[in-house]
Every structure is written in C-alpha cells, then in structure tokens.
Image (cartoon, rainbow, N blue to C red; front, side, top):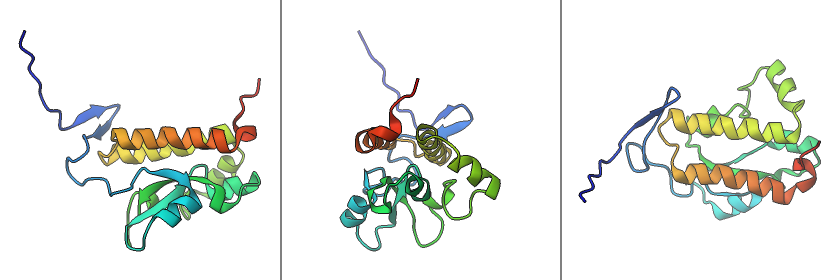
Length: 156
C-alpha cells in the first residue's frame, strides 16, 4: 500500500483562514501559555512582546471577588504597538458602553465563553489558530473551573 502525504499550508474554515505553526509570522515563544496573571507576569521578561490576557476580564472577575493577580490568563502577543491582545473585545475601550454592560451582565460561564471565542476568532483570522493555541484556550477553561469552582458549576 502506498500512502501519499500532502502538506497543508492553509485551511479555510467558516470564513476563517488558518495555517499550521511555522507558516508565515510564527507565534511568539510562550504565546498561548496559561496561568494566573501573576504567574505569567513573573515568568515573563521585559521586551518579550507578550502580555497575559485575562479570561474573563480582570474587571469582570473583580466583580466576582477575584483579584487581578489571581485571574486566569493566557499569554498573547502585545508589542509596543498593535498585537493580538489589543484586538480583544475587553482590551481598553474596544467595547461600547452598551456592549460592556451586556458583558458584565453575563454569568461567569458565558463571560468565559465570550472571551474564549473572541481570542479564537482573532487567532483564526490571523492564521495562527494552532494546536498550541487551541490547547491554551482549553487550559484557560479548565483552570477557571479548578480555581473558581463555585463560579463555574452548572446550574440546573
């Protein structure tokens, strides 16, 4: 039996295009790593062009009684200008006042789902939705459930 393997360089899926890691502009070393905000800040270094992105946002979690340093985050690209982190809905003033009110009105599970889908969309649009990023987003969900079980228990 002969098996022919073809390397896929770009995949189009639901109007998003993504490429395997290493094609085009690669992810930064440590991008997609998950931990608390403090863990990621402590592990990083000045000039690495990474910043921890809270999921859900630090402001949302503060309303749930969680300190900024304890919030679950994933490292995202953030150079001096531009970068994936600045594209997230919860960065700075990227949401209107109405959108913010709706976001802060979500239950914790839905706020987390919003932020996961938003990050996923950004990585897919930039062709950077790699297995490492997919795993990182799954790890964000798991860490939130482990660290804050009372916020993420399914209610019937």
